[in-house]
Length: 406
Image (cartoon, rainbow, N blue to C red; front, top):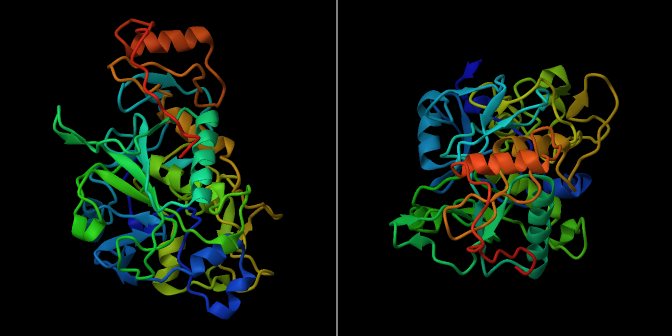
């Protein structure tokens, strides 16, 4: 088992909403998802004493454009280049906790998956992804959110709970619910907590927020979607591409960007001299990460929804920033999760059904980490394991949970 300490300087992954430093007269040469990035106002790039490069927007700090750092993460990065307080490990064990809520175990049958994400501890992962939709979200974006959630639920074990309009505080037990709030960041001021663009935290962040600097006083976390009709929908009539929403959601469930994996040099070459981004702007978006990650296998997933395109941020489309060591090309995937995106989710999550009691009921379809489906007997045995030997849920207590009419 290899232990690694996260180095933000090398913390990099793919994104849909990165920062762009190219001039406006050349923005039109870029792919549409990069054009959207170029329109966002930039903050101040800072190289910390630890050597890590971050972007300061007011009181908030970002890495790679669309990943918001929590205050505790920033303090760790500032002093010792560590994104987390404890060292993390590669997955070379035959099993891992199947859910942070249950500590149930799923055995991994395919050791060659290659997604990369956060350490799967109870402080970063979700049992169910509780979410709300802000009133400022457009009708087209609501359709995209709904489609992204349904796509993720249909292909992985991740489950969402629509808590829009429900209390954010549990008065009986005295705690704030962690949840995601989808909204449109609208401010062109990069220092504002509601700066425009597509961005999210990586994993769950359930600390109570500061309203003055983070726009809220509960344990929710923002997930911002850029509303830009000029990008064009991927699946009409969305005003935000469904793949953009899925990308940001996958950040929130724990996945990093793919193009800056520590082992990327085995598969791809990144050419700084061909990139429009320079200096700290380039480092914040393309530096490899070498620590504090969870990763299986040893190859970049070129089909990941978290992967950069070859010509993203290129000075000249004839000279790609990213090239394949073996030659050839690869398409940019902004329409669906790859098999390896799914494998990460299916390794660490279980498909719980929303209930008001304490029974841990699983959905009829439960995926294994190789994306095959558990047999009915396997599912029943796992459900019994999660519930002190009882495979049969009480005939009550399911909650209404609608993702189609947001």
